Every structure is written in structure tokens, then in C-alpha cells.
Image (cartoon, rainbow over all chains, first blue to last red; front, side, top):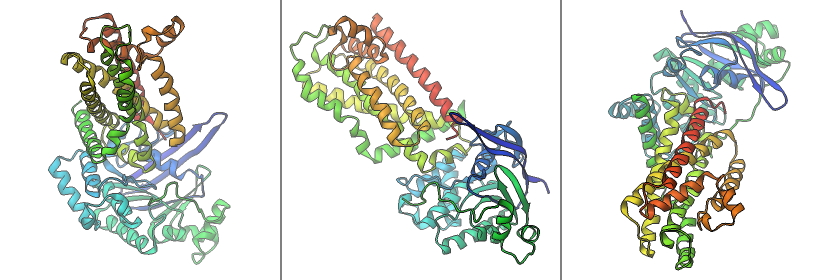
Length: 262
Length: 251
């Protein structure tokens, strides 16, 4: 199977006033088509920076990557046509109506007026937003807002979907529903999913394979069972034990950068 | 080129609809210029202002530039909220031209400033302003170019800073001296030598002079040419800066 994402030595340094911060020091990873990859790491490990590079938001300072068949450096526009991205903060304006957001997104993906209309209705149906179309986004619950974010990211039926901490701030019911949705996208549409999370149970339950980053490098990778066996000595161990053994730190708790609902 | 235009139209449509649905934002920038028009304008009547036109032909052009300083220069405020909510990043990940994300907003800002300018001129007419239509329209063109310049700079700044608390002081710090030194309320021709010299370092001064000329019915003069040149130059530099920020911003 061809790879949906392949990176070699992907790195990013930030120049601050008096020092240089190596946020990502060289990430090598491969994600297969149709795979759900869990991207884990402690605070400041470089998860979000890596994600932002792979989604063309941040140019890498070194290394190469191919995403959904397009070279990140040479053809970022090609990458953008084939990926969907849901940021941790989401991406909708609280003052704008759900329908308007879906329509604008369709138009930005170069759909004609009618096609955008049709696609908005389809997505609303798929993500159970039909009843909410005329509401301003601020009136949506956290779970509804997340479904809208994902609907917008699916506008152009992307081959690869990037989700940054998708269930942060969601109630358990909405979390379970979102996991189900991600599985469904993979089963029915063959979507490759690259997701960062700091919930180890989420990584354990949802991802086919895990990549643990620490200090800007890949520290470990494998299935959840492999990581538990290798790092914690038994497949019956908890993923948290394996995580502590890999990174020397406890659960990768972190606060969301922006609240989901204001 | 065609996708750029289409994307610009789509982005412009979104923000025009937003502006129309919140009429408050249309009015806010107009409060100060309208106050000056009504509470300050009548004081100038019969005063020797050193220009060709009467006092209204001197004041209203200044107020149009002030409107730009208080309306377009704050355009970046809205984008800070959008940045916070992730709207900018979401749009930057679509195939839409990143330049269009700026240009579409500018289309809205120009239309907004023109609409507000028209209201100011109408209010001026009610108070006694008389100016040739061609001159007023030409003045609007100059003001539109100013809107492009100020709004681009405002967006570039807003994309770089992370909180409104950093943004507002910068704009206010620039706006007040810019307003005083460009002779918005009274022509700089009245100023003592040193102040007049100083004001020549403020680009808006040339624009104010040019708009006053066209409101007085003088079109082919050096002041008009200089004002058009300086404003266009400022707009081009600002656009280049704004475009660069929108294309590369890693914030």
C-alpha cells in the first residue's frame, strides 16, 4: 500500500530574540493509506508544530515530506487540495451561521454556487447538523461545534484528515460519537487520519498505530500492544506505563490553547 | 489570475454580508468625524483658512481622511478575533489563494469607507458644503486608495501581534499624531515653519491637500498629483507587506 504521509528529517526551529528553539528536531514517519495514526507526546514535544508543517501552515526549516501524494515543499497547493484539517481551536466564527460557514468553505474549495449548496446539505446530513443550519455557530454545543469543524474539513472529500486534539473539552457522549465517526470515515471512505491527542485511552481505543514524540523526535512507534509489550513489559500493562517509560513523564496533560465554546 | 479574482470575490462576499448584518460596525468609525463636522465645522465659518475653498471645502476633505484613520486603521481588530477562533488557519489550509484572503477583506473595507464617506459628504451638504460632483468623486477615489493602505497595514499588524491589548495602543499612537500633523482639521498652510516642515514627513498630509484641491474644483494641479502619488505609493508598500504576511504568517 502506498504511504499517505511520509516524512524524512522534518524539522523546525524558531528564532527568538536571544535564542533558537528547536521545536522539531527531525521527524521520520510513515502513515499508510487508510490508517488511523495517533500522534502522542508530552507538552512541548513538537506535536502541533509537526501538524502545522504537514498541513502547509508552517514551512519546515529542514527535511522533506510527501502528503497525500504531493511534495510539501514543491506543491503545497496540491497538498491543500487533498487534506482536511481541524485545529484544536476549531475554525468557525461564532457570529456566522452554520450554513454560511459550510457554503463559504465549499466555495473556497472551488465548488460552484450550486455544488457548494448541495455539498453543504450532504455534509449537514452526514454530521447531523441539518437542524442547526440557520443557527450562529456560537449557539452550538461543544460536540455540535466539533461536528461542524469536521464537516468543513470534509468538504472536498480529502484523502488525509488531520485532527488536532479533536475531543478536548467534549463530554463523554460526544467523545464516543466522534470516535465512531472517525472509524466510519476510515471504513466507508478510506480516509487516512492523523490525530494528536493527550488522552491515552483515546489513542488506545481509536488509533491503529501510535507514534510518540519527545523533544522534537520520534521516541517510539508501534501498535498500542507493541508499545505496552516493549516499554512496559506486558501487553496487559497500561499505555500510561509505556508512555512514562518512553518519555520519562506522566500523562501528557495539557490545557487547550483556545476554548471550544465561548 | 482568474482563481485569484474568484477567491477574492468569495472572501469579499463573506465579509460584506457580515458587515451588513452588524450595522453597528458601520457607524462606529463615523462618530468622531461626524462630531467634528457638526460641533467644530461651524466655528470655521468666515475664518481665513488660507485655501481656495470655503471652510466646508477645507474641513470635509480632512474629515474623510480622519474617517480612514479611525475606520480602516482598525480593520485588523476583526481579524484578531478570527485568528483566535482559528478561522484564518482554516482558510489558509484550503486551496484558496492566500492573497485573496487579504484582498477580499480589503474590498469590504474600501466599500465600507466609501459608504461612510458618502454619508459624511451628505451631512456636509446639509450644513452648507458646496463642491463639484467630479471633485467629490475624485476625492472618493483617493480615499479608497487610503483605505487599501491603512487596512493592509492594520491587517499586517494584527496578524503579527497576539492580543488586542498590543494592537490598539500601536494604532492609537500612530493615529493621533498622524491626524494632527496632516492638517486634518485646519490646513497646515496656517502652521509656523517648523510644524509645516514636520507635517511634510506625514504621508496623509499630501492626501488631505489633494482632496481639498479637488473639492475646490482644481484637478490638474501639483498638489493633486503629489497626493495621488504618495497615497498610491503607500498603498503599494502596504499591500506588499500585507500580502507577505498573509502568505507566510506562521502565527
